[in-house]
Length: 391
Image 1 (tube, helix red, strand yellow):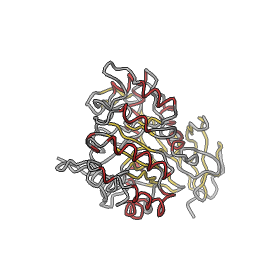
Image 2 (spheres, helix red, strand yellow; image 1 turned 135 degrees about the vertical axis):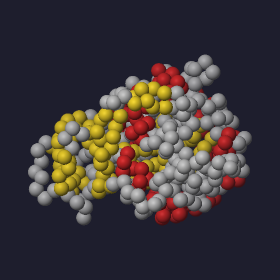
Image 3 (cartoon, helix red, strand yellow; image 1 turned 90 degrees about the horizontal axis):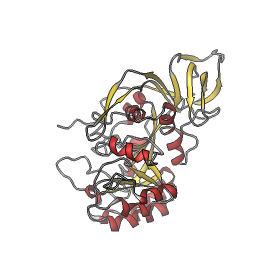
Image 4 (spheres, helix red, strand yellow; image 1 turned 120 degrees about the horizontal axis):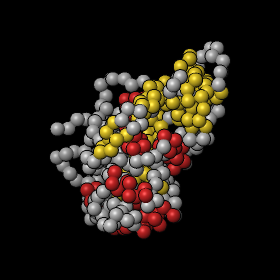
């Protein structure tokens, strides 16, 4: 039994239903049992949200949450509560060799919801983040072991939401022509979406995009890397990107430490490349730097002219729909109570892209409470890693 709660008098903003009004939210047994002004508080713990924003729990479509299992991992249970993110999509931190540990030791015990995309590479990102040994997980293409992925499907199939491939020079070297078709084959037999990361070529973005079909995901869409940028040398949107959008490939921000440029974003957005999801690619190298958390990345898109409703849509129901999870990113009667309470701040702050360019964000969000599955989750310090600091 979870605590009976009544969130009183907040501004409920739910992009999925286009609801934007002052009302109460009643929660019992982990589910939303009332949505109306002036609900009876008898028997409930009352949380006064007057002047605050009440929204669906945020869905971050690109994270790295295998703390303790990879050098890049951050602890979702520490970062999520202070950022309003209740659903963390881990993008390929684990491969077939490490998925079992990730599932039993991180995903299952978490107070939040961690949804895994498995890496095409057998070793996942166990080596990524090691600043003294820079060897990608698919520099030896034999790590793309489809037999082991079939084994994982047999043992954990329902838990796996997608397949991840880092298709850039630092991850697979010159092996793009080998690993791209293997990724397509693996996603098809796993019956999950394929997410491909773009970065410095090879392979080039034009070589990558033919392997993505409707419902698949291209991440790092505003990265400035040579050969992996959605814009050509004249800053024009590539025809291959337009074709991918037209056939239903989903476009994910995946900010990361080196994968987001204000200049590329502004030019691409003006030419029609709008994101289907705003996500962080949060990991140990950027949590204390340019990324910080999802509300911080959302502020960057507000600085680019997106409305509050737009950035909330792209961090709630839109990424939930990409995942095929209509139960997430929404505030609905009878639905699971994933909620976040924010104060909207209008004190201008400088925000930075991955290249150090800055813009002024006039609106930011400060999380004051996070509920996942009907429970209030608070930030705590139990000694577990939030994110490592490197010199």
